[in-house]
Image 1 (cartoon, one colour):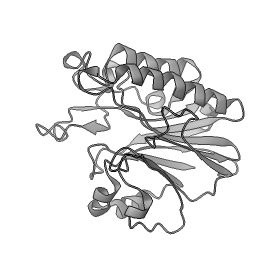
Image 2 (spheres, helix red, strand yellow):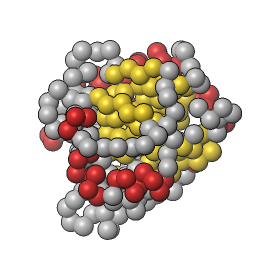
Image 3 (cartoon, one colour):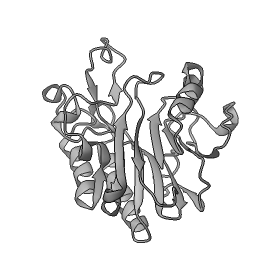
Image 4 (cartoon, one colour):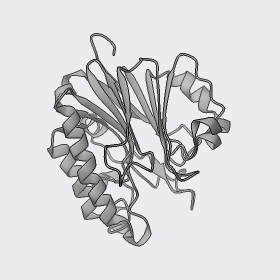
Length: 254
């Protein structure tokens, strides 16, 4: 199973920037996107062979997630069963025979860390949601987690301490995910510096590779032996993020 995940920073905008050609070139079995900033009836999108699932924010032009899957899920649910979190369209869960797949767009702590307390509440509730799913079968989750976990996950760690996405609290939240039994698939297979998934639009940051790795694919520990490949696609343009993904070996290919 080949999984691709991408924060598109607006699905309507990226459709005019090669979205279909990117999908055709990489041909994922499951394609998860975050920050759709649209409701499905606002988007003219035809993806032959894919089942479509959308979770849009109540606020127009904000947040939102989607899953496009060649494999028909057993069932699909939306949100994490917490009313205070579920109005922003941040989570979709698709159940397949051998695992749950979750796509997530984690809330940003915002400038001056105005939303950091809410972000910490989100991190706790989202991890609890994942662990509850894992009681039934292994979990794969992917998306924009809005945190660079360690100093090798951003180009300028010393300049960004206490900035949103690199606070001790947010980094600790991701550490809790790992210590609870999930694997950061890319970092599991690649320990090198210089691999990022988001770059500011300012100061030519992407050309200079002054970036952050804040987009992830994580899997339950029980799926470790099936992990074949994890990758970042930094040359794919169209958003301030680039796609990330993995290939998971599966006897039944679902």
